[in-house]
Image: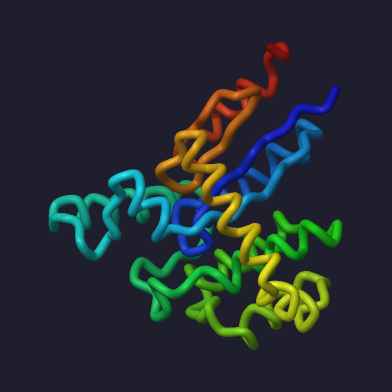
Length: 201
C-alpha cells in the first residue's frame, strides 16, 4: 500500500525551497504519494503566534541567516539570503499550485520551481507574468494556471487548506505529516524518510 505525505508550506519560505528537491527524491525513491498543500503565511502566523522574519529580534534574524547559509551549502542549492522580492503576497502562486494539482499536473515540481524563482532567481512570484512563465518552464500551461489561480473557488481552497493546516497543529513551513505524525522543518526530512521506511501504523 502506497504511503502518503501531506506537505504544507508557504510559497515564500526559504526552508521549503531548501528542502524541496530532497522531498522530491524521497517521494521518488519510496514511491509515495504527496499531497501538495500551500498555505497562507499571514493567517498561519497570525493564529499560531508566528512572527515575520523582519519583526523578530536581531539575534533571531542573525541566526536564521546562519541556518540558511548552512543548509544551502549542505543541499547544494543556490540561494539569495535577501531576495529582491521577499516578502510578497502568496495567493497567486499558491493558487497556481492548487490549480495544477486539481488538473492532475505535477504540482510538486511547480512548487519547487516557484520557490526557486523567489530564492535563487530574483523573480517576483506575486506577479502573474512571472508565475505563468515559471509554469511554462516546467511544461505546464502557465496562462491557464494563472487564470484558474485567480478564480474564487481556487482561492477558497487556499483558505480551506490553510484552515485545515492550523486545525492539524501546523505553525511553520515546511511541514510534513506521515501516518498522522507531524514533522516541522526541512531538517526533519531524514525522520520523514525513516518513517516511510518503517511499518504502517
